[in-house]
Image (cartoon, helix red, strand yellow):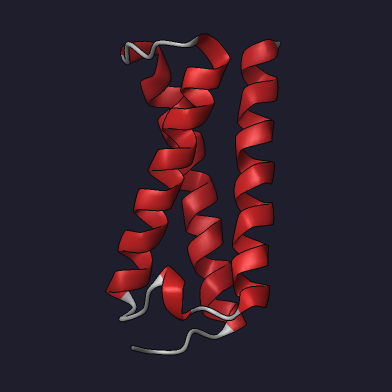
Length: 91
C-alpha cells in the first residue's frame, strides 16, 4: 500500500466534493429515496464512502492505511459537503 501525501488527499477530496454535489444536483430528483432528508443524507454519505474508497484504491491505498489526521480531515470534509447539500434542499 502507498502512503498518500496531503496534497493527493486534498485532490481526492476536491474531486469527491464535485462528484457528490453533481450527484445531488443531477440525480436526487430522479431517485426514489425514502426517509426524506435523512434518507438523502444517508444516501450521499454512503456514496461519499464508496467513491472515496474507490479513489483510494486507484491510488493503491485504503482508508485503513491513512494517518489519523488524514482520516479526521476526511470526516470533516464529508460533514461539510453533506451539510451544504442539505441546506440547499431545505431552501
